Length: 154
Image (tube, rainbow, N blue to C red; front, side, top):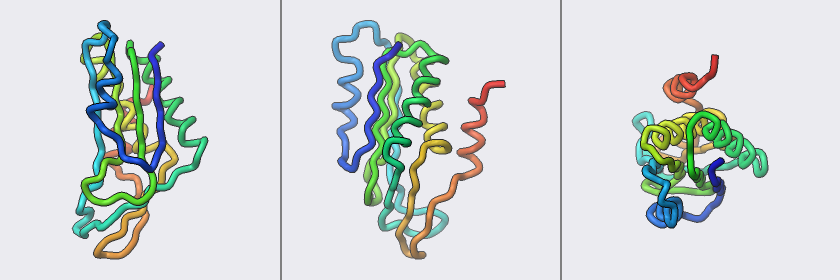
């Protein structure tokens, strides 16, 4: 069973520091895979000035734990880390870090992709963009749903 860190926070995070912690003093770790999501400055042809992320405290963390637990069942992992920011963010700001460590790269890459695909479609976060075309709530995209479906068990 891997170690697990889940944080939902308004504060920014240092990607290098977070990744260093995942593998320090762990000679069995041969791979660290990560995804860092950033706020884009454009969406659907309109400029984005900021994004506000909201979540359901308690439920959000539990859903993230369940997602990571499923990743642990599928791949031999050493550690997992998920940090997701909330509050007001601007273009270029970091939104999310998902990382997985394993003895081998395939497990780390696949687990990281799985976590992000499910996070995009199943975690209780709500995004509202503020920009040149007004304010709008961000809806799930078809390609995000398709990515999550590839992980469904028969």
